Length: 261
Image (cartoon, rainbow, N blue to C red; front, side):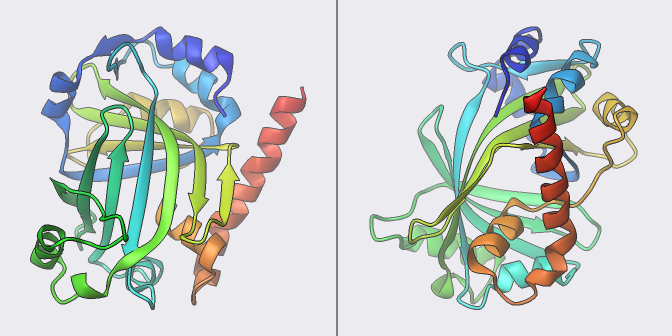
């Protein structure tokens, strides 16, 4: 949940348009993630000394996303991630509610710990199947898998997107996470916020990372897909993500203390 003072903090940033933001899409990048209580986001934003600009579309600065993850019946992509496979993939359809556009994306983490993303405009059919164009696209990057993929998890969240004033860093803050499976079961996580730093070089100094460190928030690997799949499907090897589930529980307790004050 986003608090009123957080909205005020977001409105204090200089806006930037979508065309300018596209100049720093970082489809081949390094990622750094931080997970904290949604109750601390205001303090983070007000500490940034105007070092960032915020994406604004049609006078809006907060956007809703809906992501449908595909996997095999034995959760191949899930297992790749949890077992630390050096080169692993995710396949997803992501709808940008602010524009109505939906993209099919293949997201790969390489053995050099870089994230590469390819995408085309496409969406699932009414019967939740990939069309020929989607299958051909997936096969280009994950051969011999596209025919075995099916929707397994839906993730919804809200996002604010920032760009460093020097145009070398892109930052997203996600909150109001909700996970659902294809049968309608769902789990809401209003207490957590996920900050992700996206940049082209790992040795680039980041004001956002510095401020988070000052708040004693450390970087951590955090996959929305793996967390949601663990909670709703409990596939094999879910115990390997236990530390992340404990982190979520700790943040939930911190968040409850914050809103009770």
